[in-house]
Length: 395
Image (cartoon, rainbow, N blue to C red; front, top):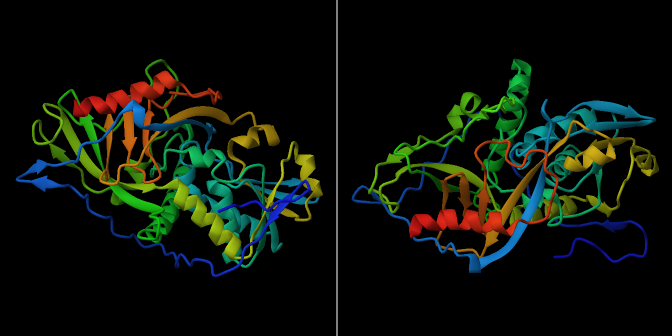
């Protein structure tokens, strides 16, 4: 499917027609959490072997997560006769918080009274902002330099991680925690309505934390060099979302004398999910214009008076926001393996069984891994270490 129509003009305009997918009404109620899909035989965990081999690698990709020490920017500012509603800076939580954060941005945009609204950016936050504005009756145009799959959001790990580098612990005040929880719950409830759709844009998988030390632990170490800690909010505020973990003692699983803890986690198959969001937006009458803005003054050329800025890390350059810190994240992609429906975390490396390509990622000892690094050149040695670490479980 091609998103871009050929045009000799500077901007390429996209439109769509057809019936938009209705996601269903959201409520404040808590929804049931699927139980872990643990394959047991006489009390033993049975898992099909993973073909983790360097020869099966299809790509090594690098994304830049937009971290702000104080958390996402969701304020409103005036730029001449235009109103800018900011919706960026979610660290590693962009996909996870997108529906809840974009609901906040949508409410602020509609509060201006305008019903023709522009959205900057075509990643997780831009697409969800556009869709929510549409459902509220607005006419929406998304302006973006790049489209999926060539946006930073498309290079994300693709798992439910609503507090991943969301802010520093010192900025997780009671008001911030309340805001974050409302975003997380709104997003989580929306994702439950996307389960079971064609292409499996959203699904659950069983994830196993493997430990050599005889005790399973899902958390990495906190920094010990004096740097401030990152906020950890999920366990405190979303405890009712987490399925109860199951521990597997040594030799009751395929990984020998190690200790294993299993639970269930939500996953986004980003290729299918992003394609669905774009298709729904176009089917609802939305337009996408491919254009690059270099400074806020360039926005004066837009006819819309209300604009949602969902440019992610791009906001650092576009709006001069030096508070946005790059956090490098590299994925090693591998040929899909249809019989693998489980993930692994071992020695600070994660494996995620996405349908659009298996994902291996070195996570480092703590959340400062990749912090302040805006390089995007793939590191082949890091990729090989990640694959070999997971492959060692099956040696």
